[in-house]
Every structure is written in C-alpha cells, then in structure tokens.
Amino acid sequence: MTAAAFPLRMTAAWLREQYAAMKLTPRDVVEEIYRRALADRDMNVWIAPPEPEALEPYLQRLDAMDRSAPLWGIPFAIKDNIDLADVPTTAGCPAYAYTPGAHASVVCRLIEAGAIPLGKTNLDQFATGLVGTRSPYGETHNALKPELISGGSSSGSAVAVARGHAAFALGTDTAGSGRVPAALNGLVGLKPSLGSWPTRGVVPACRSLDCVTVFAHELEDAMLVDRIVRGPDASDPWSRTVDRLPLALPKRLLLPAGDWPFFGPYASEYEEAWRQAVKKAAQLGIEVETIDYALFAEAAAVLYDGPWVAERWAALGEFVEAHPGVAFPVTEQVLRSGSGARHDAASAFAAMHRIQALKHEAAKLLEGAALLLPTAGGTWSRDEVRRDPIRTNGDMGRWTNHCNLLDLCALAIPAGEAAPDVPFGVTLFALPGGEATLAMLAARWADPSEAPQLSSVMPAGPGTTTPVAVCGLHMRGLPLERQMIEHGAVFVREDKTASQYKLYKLPTSPAKPGLIKQAQGGASVELEIWEMPLDTFGRFAALIPAPLGIGKIELADGTEVPGFVCEGYASASAEDVTIAGSWRRA
Image (cartoon, one colour):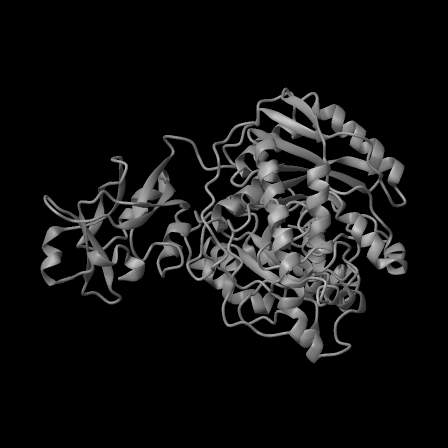
C-alpha cells in the first residue's frame, strides 16, 4: 500500500479490515508510522520515537498470538511519564530519567491484548501544564496549525494520533491534560473514573488525582481501550473497582448559566462555536437544564490555589531541590508554589472538607444527568504562551480543573471548528462509572437523528457473551490474566461464591487452585467475574488442563455462572487453603 493510500485518520477498525483482507501487515504499519514520525520530527511529537528494529520483538510476538485478540496489531503511543519496559521514562526532564524493568499496568494490559507500543511522546515537564510548550525536548506543534499550542500536558500523545503516527495514545489527566489536547487537535479524549484504570508505573503529578487517559479519532477505539485496561491492580493502592453503569442516555443534560469569558486570538469564534453547541444540545431529545456553575468553578480554583499543589511538591520537590536549574523554569515555579508554609496541615484538611461538601453537591446535581461544557474557552499561539506562560496556561484549565477533585469521569469530543483548522470541542461529565452514559450521549451528539448504535463501543449485549468466574491464575495481575484478554474477555467485577465451597492448592507447577462445591460445610471464596465472547469461549475452555474444567459456580447471591471448577478426586493430594478465603492469600 502506498503512503498516499494510508489514511491520516488511523483507526482500529480500518486496520482490522486491512489485516483481514491481507492488504497490510503490522510490519507495514510500523514502517509507515516510522516514515511519518521522521517527516514530522520538527513538530517535537516524540521523545523516544518509533524504531522498526526496536519494535521487532513485539511484532514477532504477534506472529504467535491469536488474531482474535481485541487489539491485535493496533499501534499506540505512550506519554513519557508512563513506563514502557526497557525504554527510559523522562517525564520531560532528561536528568530525571530512569529505565523501568516492567511496563505500567495499563501498558501491560494493552500489549497482552495485542497492541503495539510504539514509543514515548513529548509532554509538559512532569505533566505540569495545559499548553504543550513546557518541555526541554521542544514545543509540540498543534497538528493542524503549527503556530498554535497543541495543548498539554499530553501534547505528544494527542498530536501523534492526529498526525497518523498511532491509532490511539495514552496520556494522563490531573487537571485537563487528557481533554485539552484532544479538543485542540480534533480528537476524542476519554478521562475515566478516578482509580478505574491503574496508575502503577506512572510518574505522579498529584497521586490522589492522577488518571491515565486515551486519545483516539473514534469513540469506539477509546471505549475499547477502556474495556481492556479497566479494573483494579492488586499492586496499586490507588486503583479500585468502578463498575460502569448500564448503557443508557442521561435523563437530563446540564449546561452552565450566564455568559462566560472566552479568550485568545479566536475568542469570538470560540464563543460562537459554543452557542452552536448549546443549540445542538437542545436537539438531542434530552431535557436540557441550566445550572449555576459556581460549585464547579470553586472546585476548579482549589486545584492550584489550594493544598493539592503541595502534593505535586511532595512527589517531585526532593528531586528539584537536589538538581537546581534542571527543571523547566516555569515548571519549577509552579512546583515551588506548593512548598511554602501556606499549605499547612490545617489548610489541607479545611480544603478536603470543602471539596467533600462540593462533591456531595455535585453528586446530587448529576444524579441521572450529564454536564456539558466547552473543553476550553479558547487557544493561544505558542508565541503568546511564551510571553505570558502562567496566565495563558491558567485560562486553558478554566473548564477542566474541577473534574478529578469532584470524582467525575469525562469524555471530550469534537464539536466542529471555531475557525478553519481550529477545532472546537466540548466535554461531557458524569458521576463515577458513567462512561457508558457519556459514550451513549457522544454517539447521539455525532448524529442526533439516529438512535445511538454502540454494539462495537461497549461490551456486547446478552446472547453474544458469557460470564466466566475465575478464582486463580486468570485473575487480574496474575500470570494467566493474558489468556482472558487474548480471548476478548473483559473484567466486570469482584464477587464471592456461595458458602459451600472449598479451595485447594493443587500440587502442580505452578500451583493452581481447585474449587470444589461441598455437600456439607465449606465457605465463601473470593473470585472475579469476567465477560467473554461466546465465539472464543470454546477455544478458551479447551486450554484448561485436568483436573480443572468449566462448570456452574453458585455465587453468594444464589445465581449461577460458568467458571473454573475442579474434579473431586484432586482434593486427596492437594492442600486445603479455604481458610485464606482467596487464591491471592493462599
């Protein structure tokens, strides 16, 4: 395939079609991406760019992998504050660089699903900024108008997708870093519920608020990534189970009341684009309600004016003090604002209590609803940001900073153009677990005349998948989790068996669990429920060695689901570890 025939908008669906028709191989794709990255090198997109030789082990791995893996052969970029094994993580600061021996949790899950990790992208140093200019590796240019900012801090990741260097890219988002670059480069940007994606292997900005995010051209690709990486990591104390709510439109769509200031060289165009977005909201067939935005504005102000800026200093202050002059000047200025006595313990608790009250108010307001805001109220040229780095950066976060403090999920989507080659975007917000609601609403936004069809976005409906209960090595973070992912399974929730089971440690290498239902006695055992496509379930079951197999497991609520069981004879030579209550503690 010629470069001219290779589309700039690279999506997972297009790549799957090309692979299935034998028109492309993953090696062809990597070679084209290498050519594009080389051609765009002056845009400062990459810190560790794609190199075909370095990617060869991942390509060889695909040769031995089942092609039904959900991301088989799909290339992705990684923000350089997220670990990729054996590739330096710089966080945008060469002196800070270290070489991790393992992938970050999210990267590992994507690779297990067949995705190709291309390299590491540029960012605002230490993920501190919303402009994409605060990097010693150069200012990342906007994908459409190079004189404009790309947005940050996930600047390189957004531009890599927009310029066709990757099908999707990972960023991070503490204050808007996964939404602002999406809007400024015409992309979809998903910021999932706090803790729903693990952050193990991510350089912290504000550890209690940090989220890994994804950029993509298509909603379907962003939601597919969410399906694959979602779920707790046993080694990550900040990860948690956040079950997605059912796929349904919200009952109400909330919009801010009043006239809000827009800014930058396209201020009037952005304001008109927002007016058009408000008109479109009224055509979605959902009740629109105007609300007082004050509580969200107050929460947004706390992020940098309150003690959370001290959390950034707690993570990076020791390095900055030990390496004077190494940090980017404006980045050091922001970080040092958290080092003063103003942010003492009393002020921290006062701010926490106020945020908890605001979170409570927001939860009541957003029950059954979604909030619609401009992703950004304008943009800037790179020259303007250079002249006034603090004020211009602060303006970019006016509509974004509240999100993680209020424990919301968010989906940034394109909403036309403010001017030629100047994208305009809006962001949808919902309560934790509301990603499916936001996806449904985004699909309606894309085509208000049609009922949203999201079978390819969200988990397949009844009749096309089956639940699978796992209690051992196939659980999250354990050695055989990869088999679940390779067969298209998606983690759903943690659960327990009915109190009639015994758990045995079988004398195999490695040791495996044997779950056996008892006629009398027994206890409840912790397990996980996954959802697996029926068309791969049989192939998966065929891999299971005796004395294990698939049978019906009774859960604590009395329902029965298919899952791993063990033949009774195996207990004679096995250790009874039921008292542990879980294979993880056995």
